[in-house]
Length: 353
Length: 278
Image (cartoon, rainbow over all chains, first blue to last red; front, top):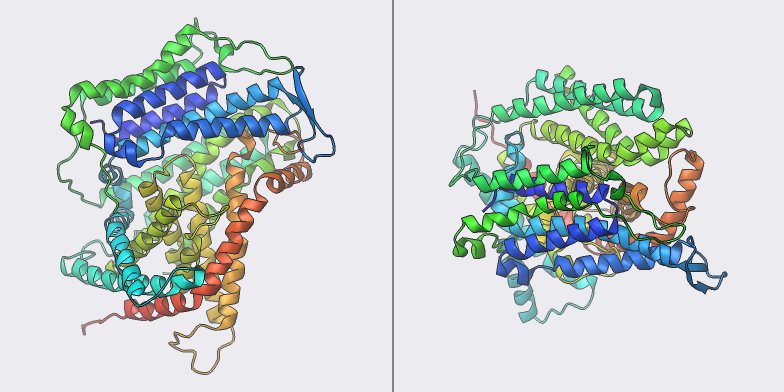
């Protein structure tokens, strides 16, 4: 099974590739790749429980075609006309506008499918574990919340059943009152017990102190540099490079502050995940894809990354090397060769009952 | 102590200003007029703003959790986030009409009772935890977390203003909720119902395609950009967001008073602390 960080890098690569390759042929290829990875890497249980990314993508493309087709009245190939008195919709409906809708829909569908895939393949505990050490308290809050969700759901069912026995029926918003208030009070009572248990086990005994002033000053300075750089980029376009450097400096200070905060936190992990050769392979695949869509490599027809059907639709260009580079995103599927079938079927079970 | 408070305040102000500029950058870029620099800037601006929002959220979270969060706060926040996430889970399983979501009312009520800092954390973590359980993790998540944090924080400010307002006899330690408070919370819920949609739209509006009078392009001027966004919002989102706004107000109107009463009772219990003699 791949590391959660590898999956996050994969989803971000899908995002960058789909944003930059605005050609329907590449969009279709990216969508196909995300579907293949989803079908191979997610477990049978999560596939049956989840809203399928295939269905999601089809809805997305259909919506983009209808929206663009009805609201954009550009292009030479007129299919039909809507009455001019219809606000926003009135005018010519063209083939070019529909094709542009397909291009946008494919890019959006590929991005959503990529993130739908990682939502299904990364177990919740792995996602919580990748929380940086600087956000220790945030990680504890998140762990408590995720642990209490199933309990709260059971509590909700119990309260509803108890109220139903008393003759209570849910007919409108007002009828939720006898359910919401006991649910809230019940949950807060449990949180009191939990807080006492945490204190009894020593939570906050050593770390219950505010950050040093130097760290706060570092954060404040970092934010000031970010704000100054961003403001300069917005209002003084000729200062682009100094402003970008200022922003990079600000980002570095915020990251250093986060790192210094994390250093004070000691965290142990039960059964830590080991970095495997399959993680390396998946990252290499992502790097290959990023290289073909971002870098000006010789021999690539970079103009084919963009496509405009206006004013008259033509066949979009397709560079075989860029296409092969996009196939690098299939690399996570190769990890299936390295794990037993039992692990694969139980890898991403999420229990919310 | 004063210096610490001043630095802490500067972190809040600066991260708020960065978030504000990052969300609203489409309205500022046209100020310089048409040039090749503007075109180049407009291409990388969406990626830069995602990074800016993430960095200012990181800074704000470090500052917020650095103020010595007690075990009681951590436990209560975790449980309240769990309860609200269950509501979002129900919303996903049984889709509600339009943009209605039962998530915002609890964030507003909790922020109102426990203050701006707790409200910000409640909004941020609720969106994060519910995204994890409903499969909603994506590039939009930092924006949603930030905007929901603002919802909770503004409710905390409202609570602070109300508590500083004219006092009545017996107000000290009260758990009663006045009608005016519920009304103010309803108005806040309604405003955020519309504002949340309008803010989240700006995140993807520069990337959207459509008719020329609804799409963003660099160098068209502030007034023209506002007018285009107005038309885009009216055409695509107003109806959807109105359902959310009315839903928020209705939920707070019907459930607000008893929920705030229950939260106030627990606030008194959670703030109780036994300090041993030195």
